[in-house]
Length: 423
Image (cartoon, rainbow, N blue to C red):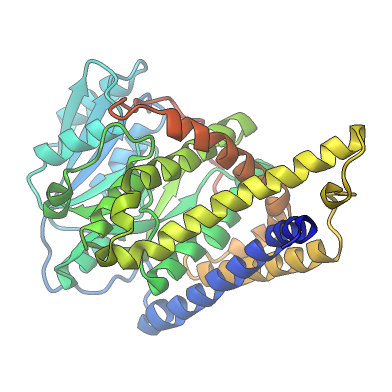
């Protein structure tokens, strides 16, 4: 193939890859919806009866969550479930998180509190909570999350029905919606994250449980050595290790959990950079296991990570060539006359709008007024693809040079503007 042919193929790849993946995710998600969601005619507040109700341990690692932790703990204590305990792990908070937890402890016998004197990181907090837990089923939440009252029953049913179920990921819903970034993320969690998880369940394996709300079988965690403390995204890491050991991970859209997300570009950038770096770190550590025939159901997950990373670098290269072309003459094959969308952009934009419409229609089952955020999703490709591509480009060298064994500790996240549900 000539140089011109190679360059043209790469340019075509920047367009056809997201177009193809959009239809892949939509097809899988629609099949999942009609086969597994629509068929049972249940709503989140009407969970299926359980053949047994095993006791549950909630694990809540906290670092500087004084503004949110009371609400989080109360949402757990209010669960429609007969037997549970709540274990809060205060990881060397410098605000009043510890004092608030101790005050709740005095009034609530179902609550236990573990205090760390030094910042140990979320993974270590989860480890300590799991070892202290009295029960086999662990439900892990962030310190700002509000679990829907019926969510525990939806999560537990998978463990009751499936002996090889190692984890179940819930359905996070963004509750701070007062800014453009907040409104876009409401749509993103439906149109992108929820859609992809549904499709991945159909095609084989899930890339990751949701770090803000996920349930685990304790014996499965023990089998893989619990959470690694040196991975920047402990949720992606434990998801891969569970599935490489042939534990099943399921997605439960009825298990709603309302969360706070970043609403500044700085906070969003730090979050997406951490997510991107976490994926690369996990692939770097487990790629040899991924090549084994016994791990073949994970091949699609690994391949998608490789190709999406390559796509980000291709987008970056196109943008760089366009910038260079503004200040210096470029060889003919490398000329990028404009980065403004032409007919290809119209096709891709139209496909995105179709994807957003389908996914919002699916998720309106769980949030009836979701359609009003469709307008804000017009901005998604422009803002989030740019952030995602840049974060991926930056994350690869960071992940490759990171030393193994270097503990990942807490950094207080951007929790956005105070929630205005329905705003």
